[in-house]
Structure formats: C-alpha cells, structure tokens
Length: 333
Image 1: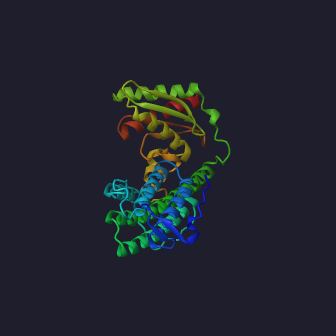
Image 2: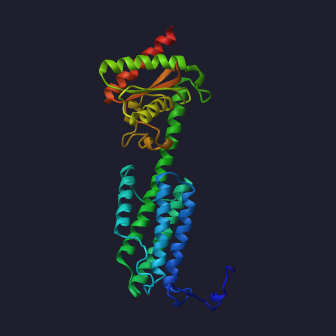
Image 3: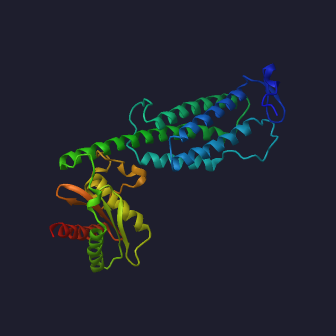
C-alpha cells in the first residue's frame, strides 16, 4: 500500500469523521505544532535517562491522545483517552520537585549547553506556540479547558526540566574542579589512584574492626570497603541490618573515595549557597552527603574508602572511624 494518496493535492486534508478542511486551517496548525513538539521531545529523550526520559515518553503518549481528540471535533470517538486533571497535577508535582532541588530562578535565561537543556528549551518554545494556537482555536470553536491547562503547565515543566539539566551540568563541572583541586593539594595527581593497594585481606580486617564497634553499640550495620578507584572490594551485612543500608554503605564508601573527604564534610559543602550544592544528584545518584563514609589514606594518597550504614549518623561515623583505625594499624604494621 502506497503511503501517498494524492488526496492532499487539492490543498485539503481530512479530520476524524470525514470532515475536509484546508491544510492551513487553525485546527491543522495546532495538530502540526503537537506533532512537532512530540518529535522534539523524542530528540530530547535521547539525551536523558531515568525518570526524566520516562516522563517525557509519557508526555509524548498524552500528546498523541490530545492530537487525536483535536482531530475529532465532531466527537466520532467520544470515549477516547485524553489528558485530564490528574495529568496536570502530576506535572505540577514534578515541577515542584525539580524546583526544590535548584537555586531560585533569577533573571532571563539564555538557552545553551548542555545539549539536553538546549533541546528541552526548544521543546518549550514549540509547546508555547502550540498553546497560542490552541487558545486561538478555543476562542473560535471551543476547546476542553483541561487541555488548555495541560499545555500551559507543559511549557512550564519543560522550562524547569531544562534549567535542572543546566544546574546538573554545572554541579558536575564544579565537582570535577573540586576533585582536581583536592588531588593537586594532596599531591595525588590525576593518574592511577592506587586501586591495587586495598587488598581483600586488608578490607576484611577493616570490616572486622568496624563490626566489633557496631557490636559495642548494639546496632546491626552494613559495612563496605572500596579501593582507590571506587570499586567495591568487600561488603559485609550484619544479621538484622536493613537491606536499604547495602546501597547506602557502598555509595558512602564510593563518595568518600571519589571526593577524597568524609561524606559528612561533603554535606556541608552541598548545602544551598555552597559551592557543591546539588552534587548528590550527580553520578547517577551515587553521591551521599551525610556521615558514615571516610576515605582511607596511604600517606597523602587516597587508596580506598569505607562506608557504613544502619544506625544514626553519629553511630555510622563512629563505626567507620573504627575501620579507619584498623587500616592505620595495618599500614603501620
């Protein structure tokens, strides 16, 4: 079957239900805007991952529903799906979550790098155009009020998502700069971080000392040790320790090694207004900014990290310090 029909050669096209209209009809213009918006969102999705990409994919589906409804002014499909008030509420909740994770907006924004942010800003402008045409259509023929709300919130959402991407990219640059600064200050350079220095036998001794301290506190803990490049060497979960503590302990050890400082100190630098604000959303969420992760040194060189989770922050730190003390005894012996 040929994709072309030649029916459009007379400058007309069909709506659902068979009604023929000119191709520059206002309703067709709105449908074209929605089609373009869906395509731009598809490109933006290629630059995103995780919840953001999934949310855009869901929006693309809702845009197709909206287009189908607008192409059916006669109500040939009265029970067809379309964006509703719950979809508007979900967008507002997502906007609120992203806004809370960023500094307050100040002044005008010049779209630009990273590519994900630039594409989201492009999508925002197409969404605004679609909204303008939709308002004109509503004034002439009437449009579902919820659909108007949906497109208004959609452009707001795309703006916030774009700025969140710019903020995330800024934090990544600051993180790399801070890590380079610490490396130079500690004389470690940017080459190998001595991952082989942390042997399994040493990691076991570190964990044993940390577990003994956790036993004194009467708190079941998860204890993780990584090498100098953040790779897991050993993981120990005491009886009764929470399953959720496994990932937290591993990520505390990784964070302490990656930024070459205790996670508690990183937390102070990650507060609003501080230079590493937002670092916890980088590295696919692996950065932990509360206590319980400590770097392990060989002289001035970071050769690993220990992460502890399961108790209060103070208890986690105390258990991690017991592991550090064991490491220092190993190095001294």
